[in-house]
Image (cartoon, rainbow, N blue to C red; front, side, top):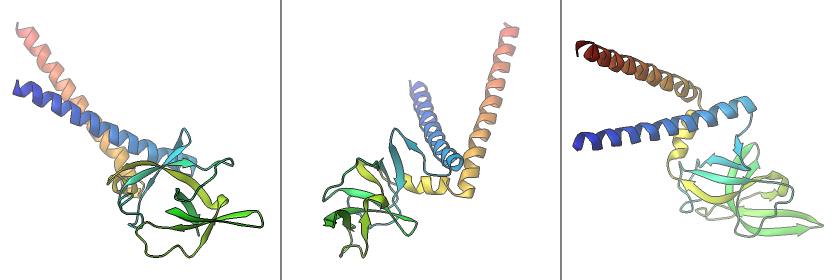
Length: 182
């Protein structure tokens, strides 16, 4: 009974690890091929690199954002991801200004003492936070996007495939030898 439970647990861990590795590999490879962040069904995953939005989400988490479209409108208290000098920032809208028909947003990180020094236009906004967060996975995603991490995402699964193939061949050989003896 213990051996069967251990086998089930081991297989579950292998499947989960394989799923995580495959997902990370997909994200890294698709972003490298397309030249920009991968999106799926109008959503993107972003890594949280600072604590400015704690406790809403923690540093090292990944968050999901709904990609900005021309029809998208934003309200006070929406959490949005936007570009500031080629850098992505995710903060909360605290004020909406309409000056001569041009709408701008004043933002602030939940954990920051004061509002951001800049205002954000609709064109600067990449997307809106959906409320979906996975803690700590952002660290792995950032590492996977590095050169070393990308290489390991290709090498490690290859090593596991080779080990699995050797194990399968060895098991088949043992079965064949036992069948021949019988």
